[in-house]
Length: 371
Length: 34
Length: 93
Image (cartoon, rainbow over all chains, first blue to last red; front, side, top):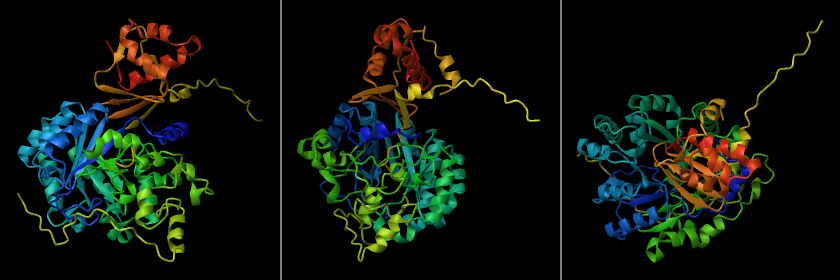
């Protein structure tokens, strides 16, 4: 279902607290996915401590934030991972954590199965090892499948399988559907954005317009497939897909990173979209008072899209996609279904792509160790 | 000869009534969460 | 909204907000989140929020609506309650 115009306008003016937020626990990761939106790899020494993290959870609960997506890097790498998750759910904060699955062995799966209000999302980038490992590294697909098998054996219940749509993975939609059906899992397909290391591979990996059209029709026929509302830029093609169909950054969602920095969303980890830090005066102060969020909550301006009849459907698309490809916020989305974004990029003599302000990548080849 | 036009009573469930008061979406339907 | 859902809502029974739901006030009304279904519901009027919060004080939904809602709005609010019940936000006490 899509939101009616008045409600979308209301949300663009901000809420008392986020509805859902992403909290990256650590920049440490045992993989080195080529498109990593958070440029993860090495732990940041300034990471929030266990007591700081616990206090943050208490604040999240007090603000009645309903749902937290715990990510990273690889969140299960943190020694206090289970302690933090269990603390959150004990206060009835719904938790989803996003993982590569390498740490979900049989024992971990059993422990996870015993936790209430918990969703698990396992990431893959292809329906087979050949496709997925190109992005995530050798052995990563098999590790993810083992995690799924372990969760099933432990009777965890329904988990999510999450795939970012690339030029390759978008040709495997039916295979993903079958894979999810095998486990009784929910399938989640999301948009590749040129964020973090994603900017380095975006040109070659983002779906073509024709692929986006096919993806849109496939999704329209399957309202049960989750998308995280990440394809609202395609809604100019016809009926809106499931979800609010609008950018939630700084309005209904945001990101808290491993060192307590608050960004508008996980896809804009860059100084331009940095709202503040929880260590100054807590998270609520940043959410309610930051200048960045105040300005994001002002009514939008159509900019170059004002003459397009579809602006109301797509709202000019994704800020992250525009920012990291060197477009202005007032430009069309680089994947605008009418090609206006491509035209805008072509019209620029030089599209200067902003460099990441926060790069924790390990710039050496990473071998996946099996545990 | 053209058959007579038939008029049928159509009962329309007024969905507008609670659409103005209530709106529902999945917690996954918010953009900006991976 | 289906006819079945409206028919299924018995306003003569005592109702209450489900224990599985978190309700958070907002400027436009409230946000309700069902922890089991993972559905999010926007309640877009303050009157509806007050009604939902106070439902448990009344012996029936219709008594609550009669007490708290203007006459010409009652049918609308009963339909809203029916919709919330259909989405499992409300339980019979």
